[in-house]
Image (cartoon, rainbow, N blue to C red; front, side, top):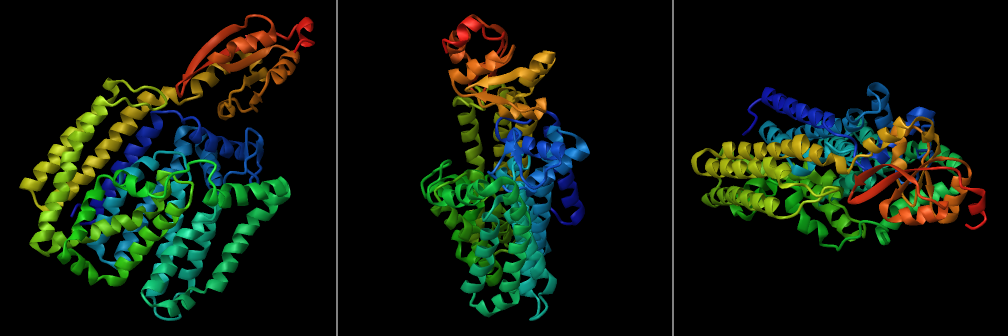
Amino acid sequence: MPFGNSRRAALFAGILVILFLSGALMRDLTYPDELRYAEVAREMLERGRWVLPTLNYEVYPDKPPLFFWLLALSMGLLGATPLAALLPSMLAALGTGLLTYRIGHEIFDGETARLGFFVFMTFSIVLLMAQVVRMDMLLTLLTTAAVYWFVRAIRRRPGGAGMNVLWGYVLIAMALLTKGPVGLLIPALTMLGFLALTGRTRKALSLRLDTGTLIVAALSLMWLFPATFEGGWAYLKEIIWTQNAGRVVDSFSHAKPFYYYLIISPVLFFPWSFYLMLYLDRSVRNGCARDGNAMMLLLCWALGPGIVFSLISGKMAIYLLPVTPALALLIARPLTLLARRPIGAGASTLFKTAASLLALSCPALAIAMGAAPIDIGGPLPLADRLPTIGVFAVGGALVFLSVRRMPAHRTVMATGVLSVALMATLGLWMIPRSNGHLSLKPMAQTVQALGNDTRRLAGYKTDLRYLSFYLHRPYRRLHSQRELAAHVEEGSGLLLAESEDRRAVEQTVGHTLQEVARFRLKRKTYLLLRHPALPASVRGEV
C-alpha cells in the first residue's frame, strides 16, 4: 500500500499543503461565490458585528455564521487575502483526511486507515474543494468528526460512552451553524440507520438522544436568538424556511432530476470510482463480510445521505462531499485485502479491469479536453489546456504500465499520483490562467486609482456588490432609469454598466459619457463610465 508508515503519510500531506498554498498565491478570489463569502467575513471583522452576517453592509440571511467566523479569524491573522480566505478549506480537508484515518483505524486496521486517508485526499472533488472558498469542506470536517465520536461511543463498553457522545452532539451543533439542518441530517442518518439495520436499537440509549437534543438546540439557539433580535422575524423566516425547508420541496436554484447524483458520481470520485467494481466479486464481498458492522456503518454513511439528497429538489455536485470519507474507506478496504492476501482470481481480474478502464479513460478525457470548447468564465485557449492534457496522457500510460508490470500497490500509488498531478495542473496553471475572467480585482484597482470619484460609484442593473471586498464601502445598485436619474442628480461620479446598456444610460443622462475602462467578466463586458451631474433641463424629463 502507498504508506507503510506514518512518515510517508506526513510527507504526502506536506506535498498537498505546498500544492494548496502555491495555488492560493497564484490567483484572486473568484466572482461571485468566493468574493461573496469573503466579503461577509471581512464585514464581520471590520464592523465587529459577529451575530448577524451582512453582505454589502446589508443583512445576509443565506447561511449561518460559523464558516464566516473562521474566515474572519483567518483574515484577522493574515489580512484580507486569497490565502486567508482559502485557509479554512485547506485545513478542513487535511483535518477530514486525518479523521478518515482515525475512523479506519477504529473500525478496521492501520493499513486500511492509511489507504483510506490516501484515497480521500486524492478524490478529485476533495482536492478541488480544498482550494475553494466554500463552507462545504468545513461541513465535511464537522460531520465526519461527529461520526468519529459516535463510533467511539458505540464501540465502548455499556456506560463508557460518556464524553464521546457529548463531543458528537457539540460537533453536530457546529455543523448546524455551518450549513443548517444538513449538519444534523448526515450524522443522524449514519448512526441511527446503522443501529437500526444491525439490530442494535438498544444501543441508541447509550447515545443519550434526549441530552443530545438539548445540547444541539441550546448551542444553536445561543446564536439564533440574538440574530433574530437584530435581524427581525423576516431574517428568521428567510434563514429557516427559504434557505432550508424551501429548498427541499421547491428549490429556487440548483433544481436537478432525482438521478442527478447517480450520473455525476463517477466524475466526482475520479479516479477511484473505478475500483468500486471490486465488489462485484464474491470473494471480495465475503472478505469484507467479516467486517460486517464496519461495512454497514460505511454504507449507511454513504448511501443514506445520498438517497435523501436525491429526493431533495435542489442539487449540486458538492453536496456529496460529506460522504467522501465513507467512500474512501469503502474503496480502501477491498484494496487492502487484495494486497494483503489472494482472495480469488476474480478479484485480481476485476482489479486489473478497473485500473485498465481508468487508464483508457485518461486518453479519452485528454482528447475531449483538447477538442471540446472549455469555458471558465471565458473561453480557455488550447495552449492553457495542454499541461492538463499531458497529465491525462502520461498518467493513463503510467497506470496502464503499472497494471501489466507492477504489484497492485504500485497501481494504487499511480492512481493517487494521477489525481494529484491533475489537480496541480488545474491549481497552478489552468485556474490562474483563467482567473482574469472571474476576478473583480482589476476593476476595483481601476476604481481606486480614480481617487475621489470612488465615493460616488454605482452600478446600473449590475450586481457587482462583491467589489465591496476591495473598496471597503457599499456598492449601490440602480435598478431603473428613474433610480439612475436620481443618482446622477446627486452629483458627478462613476457608473458601471453592461456594454449593451450604454445607450439607455446616455439617453437618461442626456449626453455621451466618458468611458474610463472596460472589463470582461464571465462572458459579459462591463463599462466604467464617468458621469457629471444631471443637467437641470433633463431632470424633469425622466
